[in-house]
Amino acid sequence: MISRRAFAMTFLAALSAARVAPAGRIAAADAAHLKEVEAWRAEHEADYIKEYVPLGGLFFLKPNANTAGSASSNDVVLPKSAPASVGRFVYQNNRVRFEPRAGAPVKLKNQPVTSPIELRSDGGTAPPDELVIGDLALWVHESGKRRAIRMRDPHGDVARSFAGFRWLPIDERYRVTGRFIKDPAPRTLLVPNQLGDEEVDTTEGVVEFALNGQTLRLRPMTTRPGRPFRDGTSGHETYANARFLYADLRQDGTTVLDFNEAYNPPCAFNPYTTCPLPLPENRLKVRILAGEKDYAHAAAKKTP
Image 1 (cartoon, rainbow, N blue to C red):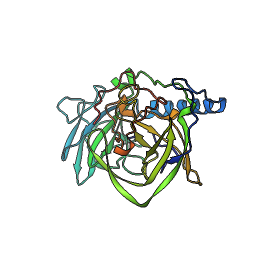
Image 2 (image 1 turned 45 degrees about the vertical axis):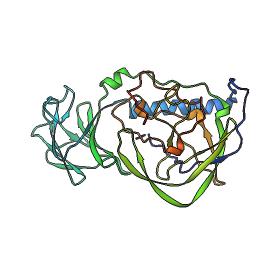
Image 3 (image 1 turned 90 degrees about the horizontal axis):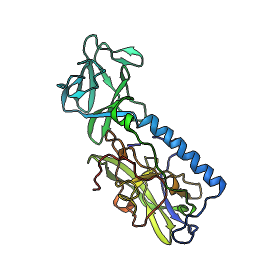
Image 4 (image 1 turned 180 degrees about the horizontal axis):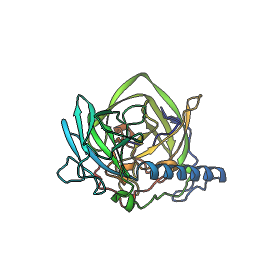
C-alpha cells in the first residue's frame, strides 16, 4: 500500500484546540510553516513519481504455473517490448518460483537468470527480488493472502498519462496538536484494502484532537507509518476512499497533526496499487479542507 518514511507514526491522540480563523477564510501560515509544508510536498511528489507513477501492471497469480511474456495467451501479459515468452511463475505454498525460458533476457541483480529461483516478495522488511527485462521490472507483491506479480513500466499508460498533483491552500487551522490515549492492551485488527484483501495489524491507542470546534479521534496502527482517514470532503474535493497522514509521537505523548500534509494513496491515480481503507472510527464527519485534492484523472473508485 504506500512510500516508506524513516519516521513512523505509531499512534495519534487527544489534542489541544486548533487556532481558528473566521469561517470561510484561510488562516495564513507563518513563513516557517509555509516553507516546511512546501518542502514536504515537494519531497512527497518526488517519492511518488519515482515509486508509484511507473507501476504498469498487477497480475494476481493462480495456484501452480503462470506463464509470462508479451504474447496475449500468457497469464502475465507483458508489454510488446518483451519477448513473447520469458518463462513462468510457479505459485505454491505461499511461495513464488520463477522458471526462465531458455535464452530469455531476464536478469536479477544484474546477473542472467538461467535456472529456477525462488523470489522474495515485498511483504517483508527486505527489498523484494526484482526481475529485469529491458526497461521492465517484475516482483512478487503481497495483497493479504494473495500473491501477484507487480510490474514497473516507465513507458506504460499510467506513467505517460500522469497529470500531476493538486493541493489545497496551506491553512494554519488544520495544523493541530493532539495527545496519545493508550488502550488497556494492544489488540490486533483485520485491515481491508480497496481490493477486499485483509491484512493483520496491531493498534495500541488513539489520538484525540480538536478541529474546528469538534473533538475527534483517529486510530493509527502500530506497525505502519501513518494511517488512512476519511472526512467530509472525501468523494468531493478529495479522493473518495481515503487520504493518509504521517506524524511523529513526542516523548510527552503529544503529536502534531498537520492536515496540510494529508495526501492521496497511489490508488487515486494508479489501478495497479493496493491501498488500505480507513477503519470505521477513522471516518470523520468534519470537512478537512487541507492537503491533497482528488487526482485530476483519478482511477475509477468506489467507496465501500
